[in-house]
Amino acid sequence: MLTYTYTSPGRFALTEKPKPVLLHPRDAIVRVTLASICSSDLHILHGSVPRAQVGITVGHEMVGIVEETGSAVTHVSPGDRVTVNVETFCGECWFCRHGYVNNCIHEHGGWALGCRIDGGQAEYVRVPFADTGLNRIPDSVSDEAALLVGDVLATGYWAARISEITPEDTVLILGAGPTGICTLLCVMLKNPRRIIVSEPDEHRRNFVKKHYPSVHAVTPDEVYAYTMEHSDHGGADVVLEAAGSSSTFETAWKCARPNGIVTVVALYDEPQILPLPSMYGKNLTFKTGGVDGCDCEETLRLIAEGKIDTTPLITHTVSLENIEEGYRIFASREDGCIKAAVKP
Ligand SMILES: [Zn+2]
Ligand SMILES: [Zn+2]
Image (cartoon, rainbow, N blue to C red; front, side):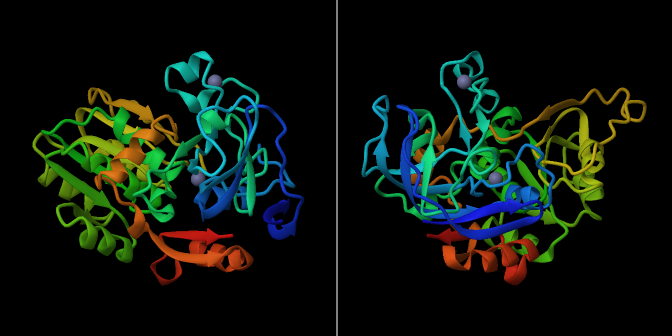
């Protein structure tokens, strides 16, 4: 079968591999019907994910049809249309039982698919712990509408969930890329008084204005003054940092009001400075919100009810044979690309 493989540091290539087989009673084989390209794939390509294994098929955000299940799998059956969770998790350890599936202590727990084991930019993928990692897609939800459930939407949902947002709040989101917009969609479910989004790319600001007209979209140069002027208590009550550029961590804590919450969703390339003397007395609460995909069933239900729609984010679709073109468009943001889908 055709796969997109991490062949050597700095290089991915289309490669033929044997179709995966069940290796464990809790495995399932899924025929991939739609996958996506994620910025984490680019992080692997650029060498900033040291645990990524050369030789693996990349791709960790996909939907498909269950082809075969191991003898211990009870939650899904062959023929089911499913989302695949970015995280594989045992469902039994202390972390899993508390919803912290990202921190599953099993040796295959956490982000394994498309990083440490073969992922989903391929015709088929083997999914360990299929009972916890696969969720059935409701009949009324298309593959496209469900595509982001297992990774980038899970990230946004988790970030909004841990940020303690109330209806009185002014919420500031830094970044309107795929993660920032998924975070925005999940923040909107909490109905805060105001939402401000800061984004340098004019095309992305216009995307926010067009699709979510109640949201204030501003540039990074404007965001501090704008937030001070458009918040009730001298800054945003909650800031979600989903940009991860060199200055956005500083922007995040500066724009927060005293005693506010700053949730860091972004993945940085460099360490960040927490200048405690400059923020003394501001009494901020910092949270880090890396993806924890424990709510995929809930997000699928919200999609089926029409409360979350990520389809406008999927701006481009390529075939698996043309995946290199998809990577090029996604990485360069050509033609307003936000998310590129891959059809095997
Ligand atoms: Zn990802
Ligand atoms: Zn676990």
